[in-house]
Image (cartoon, rainbow over all chains, first blue to last red):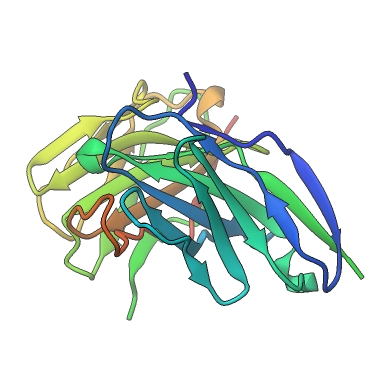
Length: 113
Length: 118
């Protein structure tokens, strides 16, 4: 079974609008971490935001927020006020016991001027 | 502040050749990882290490070998290159485990190594 599922291969958003990128996960470990990374066309992997499984509040980092619904095993990324520079691939990842990180297949986001 | 350094950035191999991808980190991280990213896909874990002298297989270890003689270095060896190993390889590192609680063990990535096997 896939540990991370990202069901949106591609998404489009108008500049200055908000967009939600979906991520569901599968784990039986009560202690885990959820991450979002951005990969622009240049190829590097850029850390965006983190949510711990015991964190009570949704994580926020500037224009990025993580909509964490533990019972649904969902960790959606919300980008507010989209900018042209947000066009990139976005990967959701989970960190489990043994400190292994597993990634989803990614969502390609295109911001339209 | 180098972070994670991978070499080479690009390499073309012929089928059956061998090579080593080098990875060095200067953050004193215990944990190091090798991932591969096939075109249009996510990252698959090849091997990882929780400290010097300790390595373990990830999701796709076949055709690869690793060693971890020091905290800083984690080379990935391809013994008999095959076209299926054409990919972009990322080395990454992280500090000690703090899963679950507030505070992240962020994976810090190298810039990637693009390998083509012909």
